[in-house]
Amino acid sequence: MKLPIGISNLSKIRMDNAYYVDKTAYVSRLVEEGTYYFLSRPRRFGKSLLVDTLQEAFSANRDLFKGLYLEDHWDWDTVYPVIMISFGGGVLQTREDLDARIHELLRKNAHRLNVTFGNETISGRFEELIMAASEHHGQRVVILVDEYDKPLLDNISDPPRAIEMREGLKNLYSVIKDCDGYIHFCFFTGVSKFSKVSLFSGLNNLTDLTLDKRYGAVCGYTEAELHHTFADRLAGLDINEIRKWYDGYNFLADHVYNPYDILLYLDKGEFAPYWFETATPTFLIKLLQAGNYYLPQLEQLKLGHDLLGAFEVDDILAESLLFQTGYLTIQQVEEPLPGMRFYTLSYPNHEVKTSAGTYLLNYLSGARGQVSSLRLFLAQDLLQGRLDDVRTHLQTLFAAIPHDWYRKNDLDRYEGYYASVVYACLASLGFDLVAEDTSNHGRADLTLLTEKAIYVFEFKVIELVKDAGGALARIRENGYHEKYVNQGKPVYLIGIDFSRVERNIVGFEWAEAA
Image 1: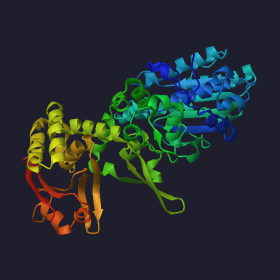
Image 2 (image 1 turned 90 degrees about the vertical axis):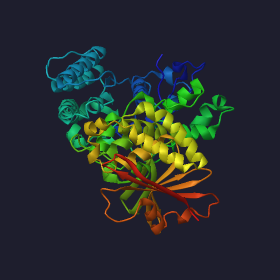
Image 3 (image 1 turned 180 degrees about the vertical axis):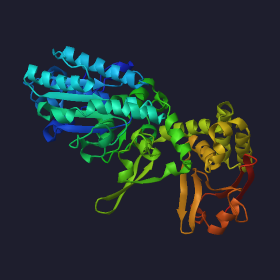
Image 4 (image 1 turned 60 degrees about the vertical axis):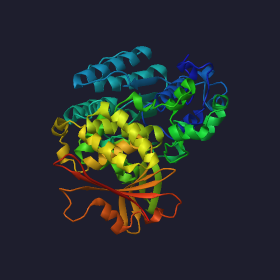
């Protein structure tokens, strides 16, 4: 039997019992406070489960809510006709496929709600479905749309096709605004946040819950929920390590754990990048590369509220999409003036940082086979301070990149390419990194912190820098390392010079700070 959500059924992944995280108080609040809602959350964060909860509640299936908040805070005497639309299954690659799928969904809802169509167009049938269902059942309808943006995201790397998908979805969603008198409640959920103008055409009363503090923990597990619900499963486990791997997502309320990761970790008993492995962010990598993006910036990325929000298919900001898809999360909020908010973004946890680093490294280098063993040796040598060996490993890494890989991916035009490869390699190892590390003299390109030592990096591409001297000299001249010298551990200065002609490291100087 389907469980209402916010309620996670661990038996689905072969655990002995069902464990319940009760999120149904959010459902009660939603209905009390408004009618039209939108929620963006990363994939596998419980959005579909939340939609299932809403469907079961509006269908008055009270037995499913025994012992939950909603059992005593809901009108169980009223049954609403529910129109359920989900684009979660399958991949749609043409407008014709999308239209056919929409017709299937509308027919399925009409059959379940015992209404018939007289119209042939998508907009005509959707409008007819809403009105006829309301009249037939004697109640205004509930519209639930899950994965509203999936047809768009599946084609986001092909803008013309994505625009076709956008117009197809707009043809469906725009019907809602003219049916307000027949609608009791409407809820959209998906991964991304496309602008209201581009998709919803006039549905200006759609309340966005994405960064609403009151609903920041509507999906995912808070620390308190984790301990309350899974206390017996957590016994004897290292909660600090669990927190390091899977916690850290911030939607302006309590930090939340990735629920997909937690359930699989508790089932399997070992740490692994469960969530990251369910999808590959190829289109995001292409966006970063197309914008000559300097990857170390992912450690501390600042965006204004306007850039963190909605976007258009033909004007996608990679940083916004990285946040919405869950590869980055909010680390800090600043409001220098009322209403002027700035967000600092970074990786949410160890899983995402190391997995993204590995993926980025494999993509940028095109040398996946050689990279795997090299990373292990590099980590060992950094931990032991063997910097001459570190130089050898990094030069081997660049030497392993096929020359044809540069041509295929236009890497010669990517100014931040060489430093980004080094950064991705270090990030894949899980080291604590500080990009553009600020001091009173300026900013070091990258600082790596370990329990035993601190490494301050400066990168230069010799064909792009006209001033004399190597990268190491720049660290010394500007004193980027000085704030670390009294921390009781050795501080190493590392200057790396790259050459576009040689396509490798041509200068690697290091010294221990006095």
